[in-house]
Image: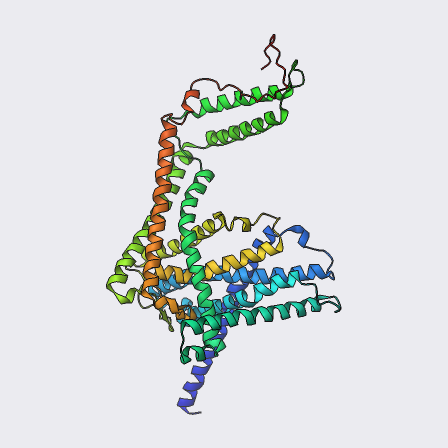
Length: 502
């Protein structure tokens, strides 16, 4: 065999082994995410939707829909990890450029992961989740034989009609916006233009949803942190408050136990019980705070709040700096590339530390957006409950999380949180090249986040100062035993004036 043929054969073998290695790595990563998401969904899934009989039709439908939801949630989690994994891979290759054991971590693998996430996101949003919903609601066509296949046929027909309706609406909207022959002709190419254009609209909706949910979630996280951690109190005597609360609880308990023995008095027992439960809950919270160590009370909460303030402030500063870059340099616009050149240059001016900070900010913004999404009045009903979430609500949660997570790479690049350019079809969105949309988006995020942060911090400081210096009306109770709560008397209540039971 000639040397040229041997070199060509060795090159083909190397490409084959690299392709097989990438497929194995992608399969292992997705299998791990799928198993994790399966445990998450079964943790929230209602037990009544599971059936022990394997030939039960409803049980089979629920298992199929559950598998589709698990797949979609795994894709959403993969979309969240996509950008951090790419940034970390680049820094690892920069730190160990000639290490044999990390040669598998290359641009081809990262680019393939981006393409797979984009493909599976389209597949889940356009086909799998609508199919799962219609499949759980279907019963088969009238007059047809009942069974799984009858439901599959009905679901397929309904999904086909819905697909034609959506594609027709997108085609008409695109033809109206771009009223030229080239624009209408490009829509006939379903795979190269139609689906990316449709996903571009979905991604734009997801990015706008992130813009609205993230600032609200940032302010909500301060409140949640205050509830989960023991807060330090200024000018406060916990022993005195705990003693007063215990005496108050004992007084109300005696009233409940001796209510029937009171002479000539009609007691509102239900009101007493509500007051007793409220006082007992307050007493338990005070005991929890009293048992907390001084380090936990005086160090844990301040550090957590300072961490949230620091991450939020850094995010706002990065976005403001990115706004200035947009005004001065056209290269700051988010753009897509087709080749992931990893291991050549760091995507942060601070090196590995800056890359680690970018990863932390990306996760922080994603968590805050999820918190803001479930805290908003429009979507609070979607909040899953442990072992009591129906299948339809699980489908809604999977779709919502997929929309948010698939828009996270575009969201982070548009705000300038990272300089890692969008790979594959993520960079083909038309609105990414519009300066006004990108500029207004950055200004909106910076303004809303700053407003929520200032209001939340200022209100918290004001409430703490008012409480500390006794201007909230409760300072008068300090230093004396709290009297039992005053009961409301019904018009027919008779009070004994001789023994003064009340």
